[in-house]
Length: 302
Figure 1 (tube, rainbow, N blue to C red):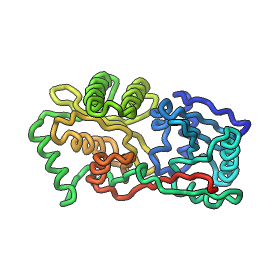
Figure 2: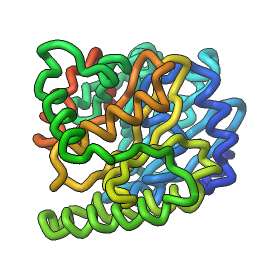
Figure 3: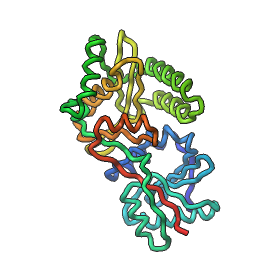
Figure 4: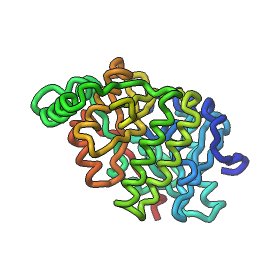
């Protein structure tokens, strides 16, 4: 990828990424500026835009990886050549991660090299019908509806509010409580350390990121919060959802309230991946996804 100036990601780069990602129907939650910005430090993420193509390279745990380039269809084969050249110049094994099916197919058509392409199940996105998450109707959501009703019965004065500058300090407090609880249970989990720092950074620039957020308050205290954004013309993506796990039904309540109040005009809700965590996979499946967004990794065939 010679003559392309890789650089670190900053807030001021949002408009460039929004233009590239907004020019196509993207189903993967990975391809949003918010996700890239949140994980830029953990992944040592760098990017470049050259000749109408957006490149993203990450370096994590000693492994260099390329995300799929984004640009016009007629530029993608040349972009693959540029990425291969970059890896060769760095004396690194060629490795693509988090690929959408359409780009995995593009790699399969590449004439000058063969790739081993494999599905990455742990990073498939879970997608739900917005109306299912709002209404929780039918037998398949009976358990969720029971939890929601129990929450409403026990906390009849609980209220939902959109996230504004006025309640962000309380959201930060709830985040820190969540973090301390999880750190005690999982002291070696570096992911939650990066996640907490990333969420605080998003709160630092909440308006600039043009996100929608929601919180549930009990006795005027934030006990749950969430935020997300529009992913494409018919889908919203939920980036973060945190709540006090000691309150029965609170996760169902914040999920249902957020979609009902902010995303009722969307057809689909993307709640991202489970990262191969058993408990998270069980929780995401319990909301009955209508579809999964497949992602793929690829290496050069030897």
